[in-house]
Length: 259
Image (cartoon, rainbow, N blue to C red; front, side, top):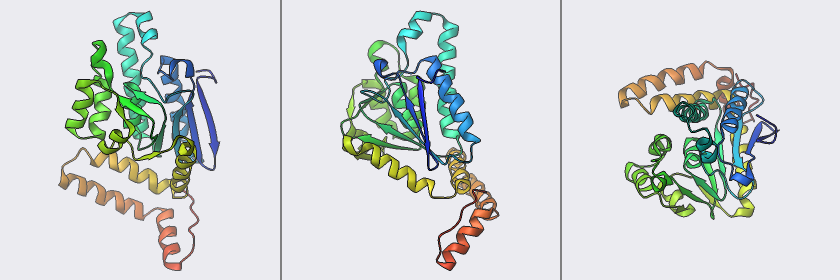
């Protein structure tokens, strides 16, 4: 990874990662995906980071895989490596112990739409557009389907996958693919304010809850309750839970130690 492919800014516990291939609509080259994975690995162990904002430079969020790079290689082993690396990246986002917020403007298509679906929250410009258009070029968006099918209902996912059409921001909001729609000029401020609210909470509690969510969602109802009862018991034993409860009873602001 070079410094120009992925920009990093850390302020007040909020790490902003900016995909920086504006001339290629921030398409996910192998180098960019590997750089993102490396950066997320570092963030996972950095207690000074409490929230990640993922955004794109230039005219759009992310147009998906770098098809020119893939075709230039033209080998099955390289294709497999590309999709394996992309799958590793998406799982790294899901399994990161802190929340990741997608800040979307312009287009988010194919693996770019997959990025949005993989993030915990998404703020989008009301002018943004989304698609999984692989079917239009004979390459069904099978890996984006994994994230998309876990973010929206079955029929909404299949609509996007089978038709490949661009959907406007309002429709993406109605489907549940994004949480908020804002004007272009408010996108940075709204996303950062949302991140600040999360960053003001205990990193330990947020981490426990995010990782437990990923585990329980795949379980049966009884198994999920059993799992989360244990999680809450463990959470109660943390310093920040004791501090937070005492602060609530005492009507004061808690002082988190993130442990």
